[in-house]
Length: 179
Image (cartoon, rainbow, N blue to C red; front, side):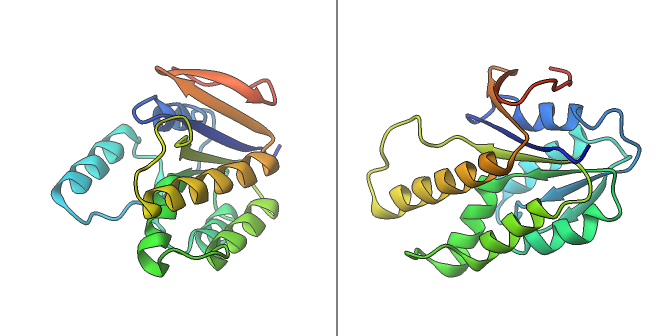
């Protein structure tokens, strides 16, 4: 079955680890990374994420053209993990600035999700549960990330919310994975 799974939750809630566990029974998993190593801290975080993945993952970096990367890799993989939609939205904000209309890349990505030929697991941060950001850009980013999460959740066959390393089912059922 070509499930689309959205895994969301707070920072360090276990989203990525859980997403990787969902690929255990697959032989040809792909990992599409959206992060850019723009400073030492990000380089360190990326290195840690790479260590968490086994050697069996083929990895692709797609900081902007996520929809295109998903279309290309879904035909070669038996499952794809996309990590992380929130970082991707930050990349788009950095590239294009704040806009009132959605980014074209988001529309392309959502179409790619609808046309997927293999299971896809997406990871995103839930930003709407904390304080309201004090500046306009922070509020814009929180809202844009929230809209993207809603769009992906609408398309998803399963949506999980991570709390302290444990998945809570929000939508769908029958999800297997390790904590």
